[in-house]
Structure formats: C-alpha cells, structure tokens
Image (cartoon, rainbow, N blue to C red; front, side):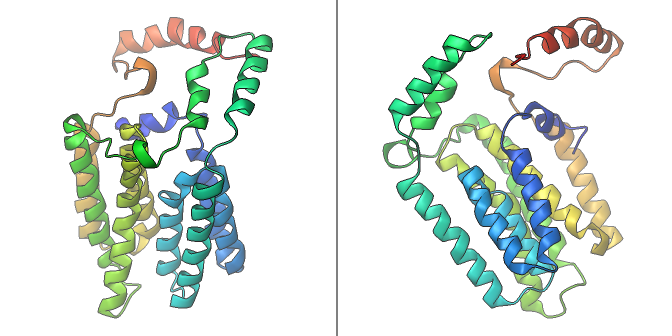
Length: 272
C-alpha cells in the first residue's frame, strides 16, 4: 500500500478530511467493544465533518461490527441513525449561505500573507445533487476503476474465508460488508469530480478491511491477496492535484528533493 501510488496519495492528501475521519473510525471501533451507543454516535457525528463519511468510514465500521458479531437490531438501528443524519444534511444543511462564504474569502484575502484561491472556496456553495449529479468517471479512469472494484471483490472473498463465522449466511454477510468497504467510496463518483481521490479511498477501504481481518485469514488467502495488492501497487496510476506527479526514485531525484524541492515546499507553507 505504502510503496504504491495509493500510499503516496495518503501523504498528498494531508489537509483533507480523510485523516480526521479515519481517526474517528479507529476511536469508534475501540469504543464499540464496551460502549455500543458511543461508537455509532461517533459515526453519526463523523457525517458533520464531511458527508463522504457515509461512503467511507461508516461502511468500514459496519463491517467491523458484523465481524464482532453485532446483533441485527444494532446494525439496523445504526444504519437508520447514520442514514437519517445524512438525509438531513443533504436536505437542509448541504451548503452555507453564499454571501457568508464570499464575505469570509474577502476577509481572508485582506489579511492572508499568501495568495488566496477563491476557486477552492467556491466548492462550499455547490450543490452536488440535481443537475450536478452525474457519473464523473470517464474512459480514462476505467482501468483504475476496474482494479479498485476487483480488489474490493477480492477483499470480500477474503472475508468469506474467515473462521469467525460458522454459518454460511454469516460468511456471505461478512463478505458483502467487506466488499462494500471498497465499493462504497466509488459511489462518490456520482457526486463529485475528484475521481482519483475516490479510487484512492476505495483502495484504502479495502486495505483497512483486510487489515482488520488479517489475523484470521488463512495463509493461502494472505499470499493471494498480498500478491494482488503488490500488482495493483505497481500498475495503478493515480493523478495528483494541481499538476503534481511522483518524483523519480533514484540518487539524483532524492538529492534534488532534499537540497532544493523540500526547502522550497517548506517555505511555501503559510506562516499564519
């Protein structure tokens, strides 16, 4: 994961909300073992950080609870709570007053010691439903999309081999939730244009689903999924934001990074 494009994408995304959501996920999983309501409440609150949590960390939490043997009543209640919060946010709190955003950008531009990108703040007044709701994946993303879906399906297969579920229905349900952890982030392609970001989140979801269950996987399944993940890391090509691209991994590339590029990037970080 870390030697491939997805691992680099994790560091490229510093400053985005994904890291906060993943921290909330880990805290919710740890709380759920003794405080079930606290875990689901934290997942519901994660939707206030960003609605994408419904497609990223909530499916992972759902899978974790299935793996822990949660009762169907708990899963249904948690789904209703998170789904209700998501619908309220999308219906009534999808974006703030455009005048408030415009006023904020004006004040920021007047006091900031760096160029303010107004296009970044425009996203806060965009509706992602109605005429804007479409499939943003194009032919250029089909290979990456196929690899993400294939890896999600392989993750589901791996979860189906776990020894924590004795009956067939339990194994099938766990397999569906494991695959869903990688499939759900791809649904964000119907709401926004950061398609490579959604593919990254899909790979992250599948990887985390496997990590949670790694100790219970049979060694043959581990090797199979490990080789598959290595092949994806080698073949996958993710486009970074703002024209960035991976630097070459050689002596000269490393020296250029340490002597010139790193100091230049550090000095570009706003001081206040």
